[in-house]
View 1 (cartoon, rainbow, N blue to C red):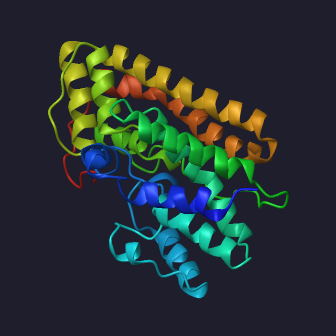
View 2: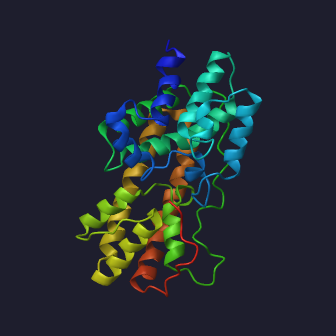
Length: 287
């Protein structure tokens, strides 16, 4: 039997800070610049931090007496490291929170996959992410609630009379809508695969630069082919996890529903990006 310190406690600390000074740059590059280890980054349709579910997480912490100093050091209470620390806290008290565990199982494995597929990630953090995912999935309770989030978040803005490039990018960059995560480094990798280079900037700006450069060089189709190829990898992972851990199947269905919608939308994106409307630079996506 694993002790809390050899599982959630240790993993919590590794997600919250680098193990030593030699890993500081790798930690910052991964978790500050590329993969955002927060729940709402993966579950909120906006893809932004500190959404309503983050406040609910903070409320749960307070009710159970979980007040680690890192709460004031990270960007939001639903940081992966804090969530794992809360599980350790509950274990030490001999308690469980099935709903909280269910919520984590919906998005933490997906965040871990983003780390595992991150081109710039240090092998240490890829291994840490894989171990975190395996540790969580190995302990899925029999009575886990079926995920309810995700209804109606796959659409790309049908309420708008026109769908511009900004709408396309906001859709792609929000995992709760697109079903996968594209980091700055991943976008750069896609650009290099298409024979292009991108400037440094926010994730939204890098994505916009990618599609602008693709449009100017006649490589929109190539970029969308690369996006679809990345989508295929994520879908393969969801299906494999579902087979290995059948109780995760409802979450797999949720994420596959999102990627399926993205696959359908790629057809529309091809038409939009081959014939781009006037670009909307207002209210750029943060990240």
